[in-house]
Image (cartoon, rainbow, N blue to C red; front, top):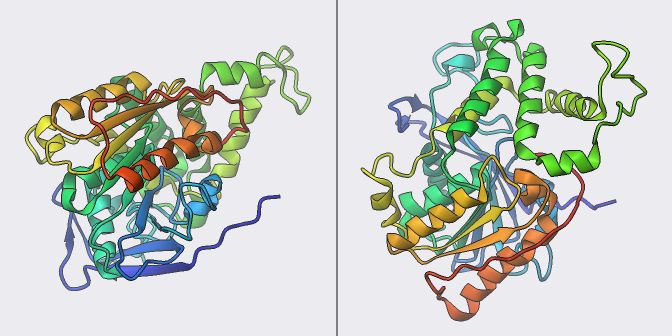
Length: 388
């Protein structure tokens, strides 16, 4: 059994008490609380910070969902680095989100009144926290999926504060991915228990949220993995899919189970808000064009594609690297070969670790990355199913 890795510090930081935090779309939040966690300690110069950004259902407690990356000789060696995790605004694990107290409606939550937020809004709030912690510059910002979107936004929005940027399985969403996110949100909205977002916290739209999660898992995995793990076998609980409409195959039982264990730990309105922020991620917004945005980057950039990822195809990730290079960015590419689909950055974390370590170590020794070099690392594995 894996021993839990507890944070050195876990706390809340609140800002925008006197002046509201203005969002990219014109909305405002006041006040804003961020739940954050530190693993390891900041050195005297405060230049050993690794900001690790979480995916849709992650949290500030990085070691809870990426434990394989912690320890001596691994990317998150806390004898060398201080690993910082921040629960994003809009989420439900301590930071300001739809479940937070409504500032203008006593005894009510934000619910569907929570404003539209963007990835840049999340990053801007994190920058306020780093100011509070006295961190002027990050040694690296690292993330997978929506966390990778945050890492890229950090490199664009705060170029002077980021030394290295490592984004795994992240790029602007394709039309197919946008469609699948839309269907997930509709599953929640069409649940009668959603009540236009005004449900009580203990009476959320469980059926809709569970269905949204099941759809999401289809985008996180690959056909190859599902065939290997489930094939056309009947549900392991003994159901016969040939005897009734409700009889399930094993894959259906898996999806239903994953939906059922997700709903007690996540909020439906947060799911809507965060998935929409994922949809609207576009580096060009606010800068006129993507090229203009990319030209702002001063960090050494590593983008990691996943061979079986069809939510963020490896070809899309590699194409973004090429556009970054054309904009003058010191950018490199690595590819994780895995049957786990998008979830490989979690399910195959042991195999992702050397890719990240190599980039960090290369920077520590040489302080320079050759632009225009593609490091295609082929790594294959079949690991335990893991959730984004």
